[in-house]
Amino acid sequence: MIEITVRSTHIDMFGHVNNATYIEFLEWSRVRMAEDHGIDLLALAAEGIGPAVVHLDINYRKESRMNDVLLVDAKVSEIRNDKVGVITQTITNKKTGERVCDARVTFVMFDLQRRKSIPMPESMKAMAPAMQQ
Image (cartoon, rainbow, N blue to C red):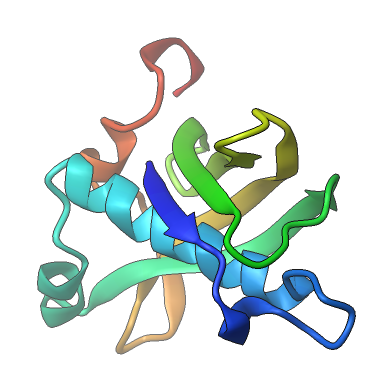
């Protein structure tokens, strides 16, 4: 989980966090999740592989405004067919406890040379609940 304080560069002309900015927040949380599980994304890239988002389903539920503190969480919720992973994410307003948005991110592991999906490494599979792999 990461904590983000909303700053002026996150705000759009309507005075709240721009919808595309939430996607960045979600990505930062996914990177932290990988780090917390001992996965070095730069080391994977040096090996010629990396995760690639293939689908993003996001629900914007409440607006966030300047100086709000947001908690952004990410969990691998499933691995399907040894190739496709799903990460469930939430963004919550720390002060109010209200859910600001939630998302389901579908990803594959990607061979950076061949530009094709590959089977999920064991380190990634280990992040998913055992009963859903």
